[in-house]
Amino acid sequence: MTQKPKQIQESHEGQLFCHRCGFRWFPKNPTKVPTVCARCKSPRWQTPRSISELETPTRQEQDALDNYLLVMRQGGTVARAVRLLVDEAAKKGAGG
Image 1: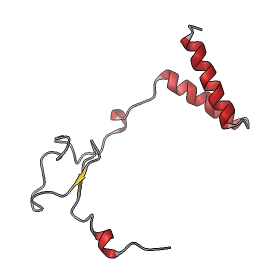
Image 2: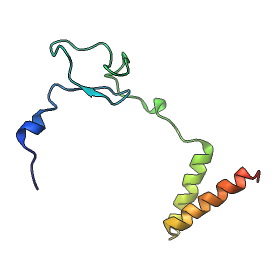
Image 3: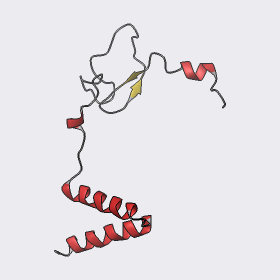
Image 4: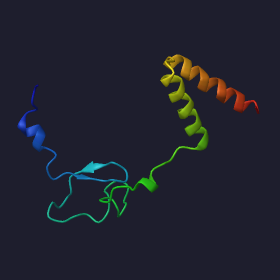
């Protein structure tokens, strides 16, 4: 396995990461911790998002995923599972 040069591995040292927008940056003053993210200006840039803040699928999206997984477990192909999803979406779009 090829190792990266040491200078590339160390180049992220001192870099900050915003858990809100995913931005990475080097602080202007490395001795002082910024109060907000340099990009999104969130004061909670150091706090990872909790599960409740993450987007949860809608009932329709969850049903589609469940149907897809069911087809795949029964030995179906990806094409068959996608076709099933498309057909279901067409039926729901047509009011059925």
